[in-house]
Amino acid sequence: MSDKSTRKVVQLNEKDIVAEWRIVRKLGEGGCGVVFEVCSLGLPGSIWPPGRFAMKVESRYIDRDEQLLLAEATVLKRMRNSEHGPKLITAGRTASFNFLLMELLGRSLNDLHKSTPTRRFPICTVLKIAIQALSALRELHGIFFVHRDVKPGNFAIGLRETARIYIFDFGLSRQFVTFDKKKQRICLRQPRVRAPFRGTVAYCSLNVHRHKEQGRHDDLLLNVHRHKEQGRHDDLLSMMYMLVEFISGSLPWKGFHRKETAAIKETISQQRLLQGCPKQFADIFEHLSVLEYRNRPNYDFIEAVFLSAMRKRCINKDSPIEWNRDQIEENIPIKEKK
Image (cartoon, rainbow, N blue to C red; front, side, top):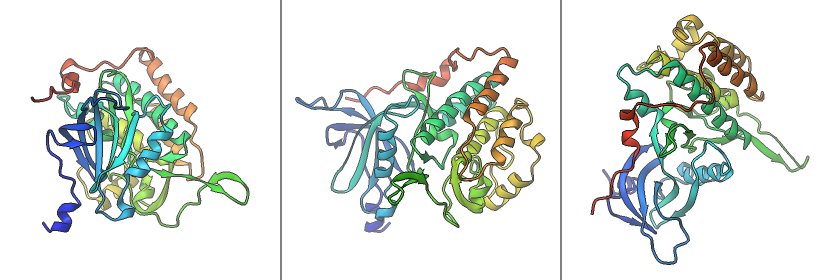
């Protein structure tokens, strides 16, 4: 690896110090940076709260348009009063990397799903996840951003509050409004004719595969495959694919390349896709399928469909999500080595 390539990778080790925090362990790595668990040093006169946090870092040696933490910090700041967004503590930089310090979350829904023997959640659990995931996306869309990478790995339970679902990783998020100086008001951002691919192939909408702008419904999938600008409906489509996977154990196109994935998504029957799922899911797919980038999804309708499915199964909507003990025992932070 060249020296230039090496500098693009942030290398931090256990017990390294970043500002007022010590590295405890590496939590994960992705296209949008590396995440570490850190603990505060408890320095005298510090203005920062004590405890453990998540620190996300990215190299300052990558191209400026590839640096995503500033945009992510913007989303986190605007979601500060949200029920389903992690709390941003601070953001900063060193000579070689940018960093975000935020609330430490528990295990991701992806990890929890994989930890089940059958890779399936009970339908009662899925419907409770659905209500919270919808609420999280509604909050995000309410501050005029679409996520563009809705998937199980970008939702997590709280560290202690394990019944609450959080959405995170806003590195690929995009604002779908702009300020019209002439009219002196906020208006919908014009979609690009051909938008670059953003998201995860298994969960994105067909519009994204063919390059369309993602909107609030777009994390559903179709728009992404078509390279259209993703909208709010695309986020919700991705959410629905995630819920289907939780019930079925997998998705019919999982493991296929992008081109084959798009073909399966386009041709698979609704009956085949929703096998084993609540029949009401079909109503949500039908609602989302007619939306365009500019359209606001009917969140109340979607929530009502989920609640209807819960009532039909005599599920108490107010009861918390219950995880198996072995699923959440890894949720507790590890003790720091002396």
